[in-house]
Image (cartoon, rainbow, N blue to C red):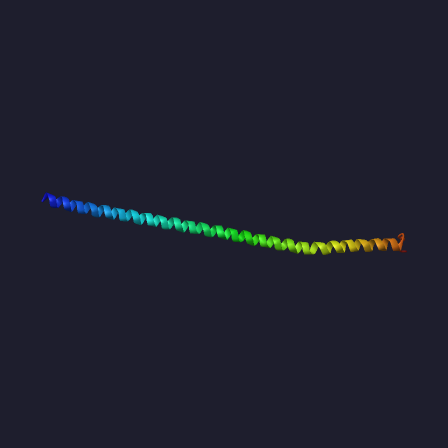
Length: 102
């Protein structure tokens, strides 16, 4: 009888040990899934930040290009206007003050 009890207790112990090991493995797997999900979320946030930064850079470059396209013609127009003003000043001569009779 003692031998049977020892065998039975040994079987129960092995069963309990096996169940505990299975539970630990399940807990570890759940923790691993949680870590993986968190890492995936972190990577997605990082990619979104990179996408937004790239978008902002593209906008900045576009605005810079637009500004450069406007600055050069405006500068040329300013120079042409100054040249025309100089011609006008030189060709008209001294200004004559006109007073209106009231």
